[in-house]
Length: 482
Image (cartoon, rainbow, N blue to C red; front, side):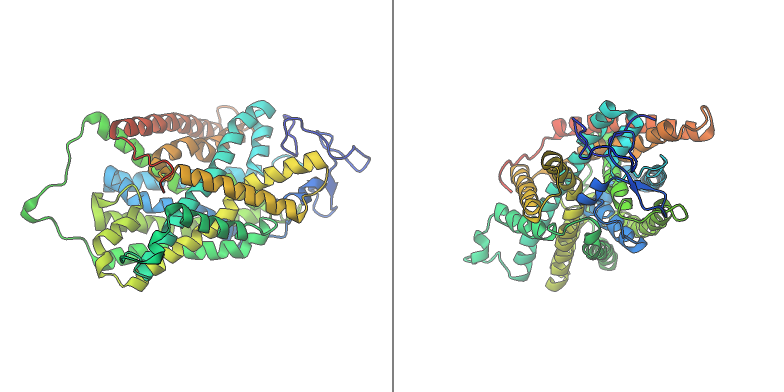
């Protein structure tokens, strides 16, 4: 087994000198509670992800739902419009099964090395691929997904706060004072609220926040598809006007790959699975993988009951009228908004905002954990409260600036899906082969190798197709104009 540092650092320094209490293969002290048989680094108690290991199956379910269901799910009807009924549902089912399998791999690998708990995706990658390759493959995708997701949450949350006020208080009227607010101001308002929520000390303390986020995510997804079915399909255009636009074969192929990328992006949160499992208690009789897997099954059943009806109902109701920006919510408001009570539209906006606020601290946790780790390495002590607050304000400020500079990130959903695909669908398969070492040429070996290679090929194709599509159709890059 390759050496894996219990703390992520280029220098990999030891915070304490080895003693007779017991050391691991990195020279860092490990302490065991005797009954559990699982060794822990004392420094884990200083970092926000592993500061508390008193989580339960309920907290795991809430964390998984809050991080797994989000605004990208509203783009699924557009993917089905490109792929059609049969292939759309097949691709959606395959993506769901594939990501569920890779979650199972991650859950099993979390305690695959005796005496070690991998409570962060990066640690597991380093153990599987070695320090250099593991960091090269995992650091950028994990931090990119964490920071990028928070940026999208600022764009989504800030935009929906503005739409909520415009809807409830008729801010479109001339002379209305609220009309003078710019998009950047709404982004700033959301960022301040998100930083306040992220002030909670550790991942386990966010359980109630995740419960609210999970409830609102299920709520607005269900509300949108139920209202879409109840309102019925829009009337066809008069005189039999056709909306179809002829496209070249290359353009059709690119659209198909972009639709697959959209489906891939809808299933998210794999970069947080090990972190969530790290909040659960573990012992020889009851390892954390058993409790975590129960939570994964429950959360994925609820996710399937939200995403599949949303995609199918949205495609049935709107066909190819689902825009790339705003997804099914924009289609519903454009077609049925004038017939829908104002308070109901405002409720949907409010649920999206609350879900975005609840998801922000969870997706920010890997970056905040790494920032606190850097402080801990330098100062050789736990971050005091004022430093933690400062780090959260710093991270929120960076995310806000990126959101203001690139408010069109939502239009890059297919490209983001292609880049993030290996983290979800590829790396767990290869890590399982590296760590578990199944019998070569056996069924499990071939399944993981095949899925891993297929995922890499698909990732490259999705990125190329998304880039070509942007070059062909252009991008409304409204820099610094949210």
